[in-house]
Each structure stands twice: as C-alpha cells, then as structure tokens.
Length: 113
Length: 112
Image (cartoon, rainbow over all chains, first blue to last red):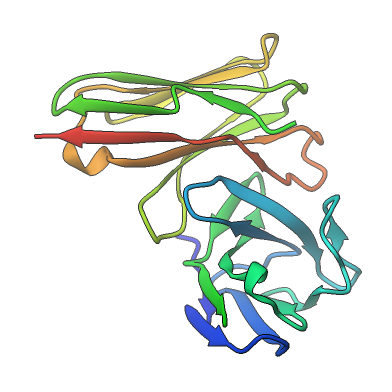
C-alpha cells in the first residue's frame, strides 16, 4: 500500500506562535503533495500544491506568507502556520500523489488559544 | 467551483441501497471517491478516469459521465461500516498536477 504520515497529530499553541506540520510518504516517493484544511462539518479545502524542489502553488485566498510550505525531499513536505491565531484552528490534512491517486495522511488537529 | 453532492445526508437501514451524486460545473479529467469517518482522514474508495467508465468492488461501485460532468457512487446492501461522510474529489487539469477539488460531502448513516 501507500502510507502517508503526519506529525504531530494534535497541537495546541498560543496565539502568535508558529506551528510546523510534517507530511511524509513512507513507502513511495511523491514529487507532488497537497495541503488541505477542513473546518468542522465542512468539506476539505485545498490550500496549496507542494512541488518538490520548487515553490508551492497556492489556491486563491490562501496567504502564502502565513502558510509556508517547503517540499525539501521526495518524501517530505512541511506546512508552517506562522503567527497563528484562533481562526487558524482547524484540521490540516496532507496528501501525497502517486500517479493518478492521492493518499492522505491522518491529519493534524491544530488548536490556537 | 466546488462540486455539488446530493443528497446532503441520508439515513439507511442495514441492507438498503444508496446513490450519491457528484456534479461539477467544470470539465472533468477524473473523479475520486473517499469516505471519511469523524475525526479521521479520508479513505480512498476508487478513482474513475475520463472515458465514461464504471468501476466497482464488492458492493460499492461508481460511474462517471464525462459529458454531463457527473459521477455517481452506488452503495448496495449497506453495512454499518459504510457510515461516514462521502466526498467526491474532481480533477480538471488533465493529470498535470491532479489536484483535487472536493465536493460538498454527503453524510451517510446506516442504522441496524
């Protein structure tokens, strides 16, 4: 199978701090990874496409300076939420592309106090 | 731009059938179906590529009507484990990045 991990699974932080979330493809290489955000009882909203070795492509309305994405290797992409505020509290999910399929990580629940 | 799913929610008894529809305003290259349980990540069910194909495994199948820009997911003889929220994810970029835009979701509850 194709396994994608995320770390941490849950994080609580104070307003104004930065939080880094890691997404790893464990048994395959992924040149493309995706970051989603999901609010309670809502659908997954694509935030950005993470490309290995190049800049991420952000969806309209997503602040690239607030949500920093780095895809440093074929198995790792990181999302950093900078100067987090309570409205950034959400479920963040990454996925890694293999051919036509996307495999999702288990998600990271971020709570900003 | 977000694909619209119908119905929004459905309650079934074990053994009953259900159909979930996904309709897009954009031309589609592929449709992916996922099931998500509360607090968990989506689990991949199946992918349909353009060509109007139909796929299925076990008691879950799906169709893809490229011309109508629609896909339907068929759940037959539902089981308790089928409960969750179903999302379609659509790709319109011809496989370039294969980024998915997820539909509005359909909450399915299967009762004993």
